[in-house]
Image 1 (cartoon, helix red, strand yellow):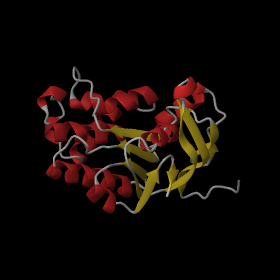
Image 2 (cartoon, helix red, strand yellow; image 1 turned 90 degrees about the vertical axis):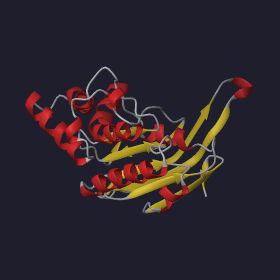
Image 3 (cartoon, rainbow, N blue to C red; image 1 turned 45 degrees about the horizontal axis):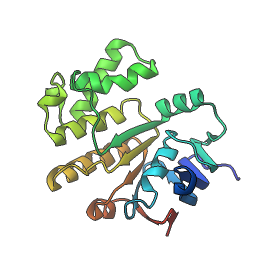
Image 4 (tube, rainbow, N blue to C red; image 1 turned 120 degrees about the horizontal axis):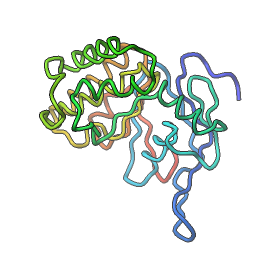
Length: 229
């Protein structure tokens, strides 16, 4: 394949993935190719079971495809060891899921600091300062010492966005990030996610059933039966 342009954060080519065993094995992805450019927001839409989330997990290096290749920032990841893929994921990818997955026994500040602790590049004071700045950016600067149980659903998802941005990754992958929120909070979460990502030149890929959210993305990629239409 030709060299990948510098403005492309993520690319996959001819991705195939089957799930299940024996007679129940299903060919979920059937030769999917895709690329995401910095500063752009992409929506992947389609009916349940069409392969959207499976693709997102492959792009996020949380699973391995059966065939095809994935590049992150121009680096081929398909043939890398699990340790190399984990390291690349920690540096380059931020995740926002439908369920925020906050550690409820920790404060919002501590939750945002967790990816930075795992990466290990910043001193304690630097991590603390960056986490506080990110919480301020999502409108929760005054709630940094609250536990997750003391926040509303919309607030918890905003903490999840701050956490996804903690290591300044090149790519944000979001799986139904507004699925559990009302219309007002859905719009707020989407606006925060896309504004902060565009401001930092990050590529955002959102899997969503929300047609209004999808319509506000830069590019919409409909998927059906394991392929893009």
